[in-house]
Every structure is written in structure tokens, then in C-alpha cells.
Image (cartoon, rainbow, N blue to C red; front, side, top):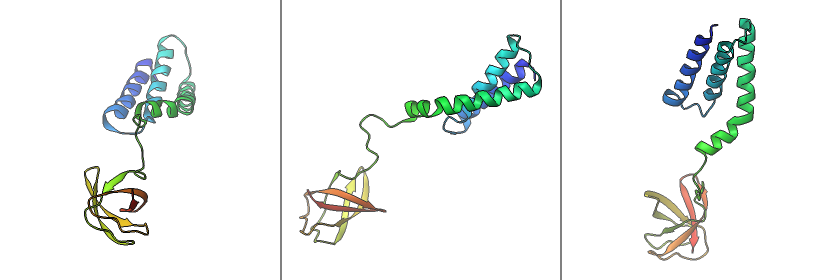
Length: 143
């Protein structure tokens, strides 16, 4: 392929990653590799077509396995201080909740079903600590 065809292929792949598909940085390395093969061809490094495809494949694999995880974590990683679990958070119990009983509470703007897993009654209006999540039911105990 000609150098400009590699550049176009690289631009199309990068565009697909950035604008159309959320491929989680898989296509970025294919696009960069295609652009590098095009740049090498433009710089005068003549390779047969099978050599260009081999260089494209090798560059893609090397870049992918070397840089993807670090780049993905850096750009898409969690925000500082973000917890991916709600265990340990507290909710305000709406009504009295005897041991083993279920009730309702609000957490982060959503209504949840809560279950009292402690051996004492939780009085309505006080905070309870989430100890476990079972599907959509929060297991709580008095804080």
C-alpha cells in the first residue's frame, strides 16, 4: 500500500475509536501503528506489502501489550477518592426496623430496600451502616 493509504487507514481507525466506538483503547494502537507504517513508507523505508502488514501487526501488538493498560487506567481510571462499593456508607432509616425486617432508605439519590441484619431494632430517623449488598437489597445495622 502507498504511504497515504496507511495514513488514511490510521486516521479512520483513530476516528472510529475517538468518535464512534467506545473500544476502550483497543483501536488507538491499530491507528497509531498504521500511521507509523505510513510514515516509514513516506520516509523512504521500502517494504513489500506483506512486510508492511507484518510491521503493522507487530507494532499493534507491541503497543497494545506495552501501553494499553497504563494509558487506559490513566485516562479512564477512577477519580481520586472514588469508592466502587457502597459498603460502609450510611443511610437514614425511614421507619422503625426490627431485626430481619425490610424497609426503605435513600442513598445517592435512589430508593433502596434495606434489611436489618443486626440483633437490635433500628429506630426510624437514625443512620444505619451498610454492611453488605445482596442484589438490590442493602443489609444494614445500627451505626
